[in-house]
Image 1: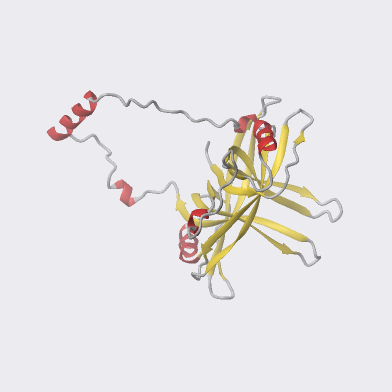
Image 2: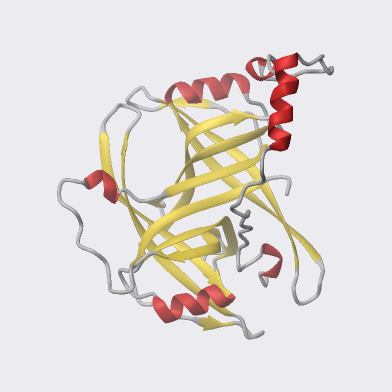
Length: 285
């Protein structure tokens, strides 16, 4: 994998599930998850609200969800952002919608049902909404200033996903384009240092916002609100201080320490290999 496109969500299902079956016999279902959030704005204001996310499950995961999930069920989903585009049949306008395609799922409710929310422990009710992408910047970033004086920057980042089509065995590749919104001092730093074509790691949260066009049509867009941005493929002075380009002679103390480690017994706890039940190459698209 030469890029990263991963989202982790913990949320609650908002409505009954409707499982569909593709012509090839594969089960598919869309979750509609609500994720309450709380964070501080660039101005330091405490904000709370709800985010809604569409998550598509395929195959065995869809069947498990259909059997055990109901409105109000809490679930963890890990997957990738995917934007589908089409042309409106009436207006001929280009439309798009971003969703999460699940790669892993964990049902979080106990068998005997959810426990009541604890009192005076609101921070323990915080849920998960985290996105991480590693990809290439699609154009030179441009910073702008909002009407209330805050600096903001939108960064385009492209990621690639490769998989093998199950039906034909053909290798496929898909490119996703992510809109990353960066605020404040971090926006200034990105604007001064990041250029088109450079590789970056962005970590933040997924946000979908809606607006209305001049013609009265409703539109939505999904963005990653960045909490951190790392410029990749560049030398880091702090790291280079610890990098040896040539083998250096070891002291007697280092040699004795190595000998002790070599004689130590192996760990009695075996390593556990975790593997997702659903692989990218098994997805039917």
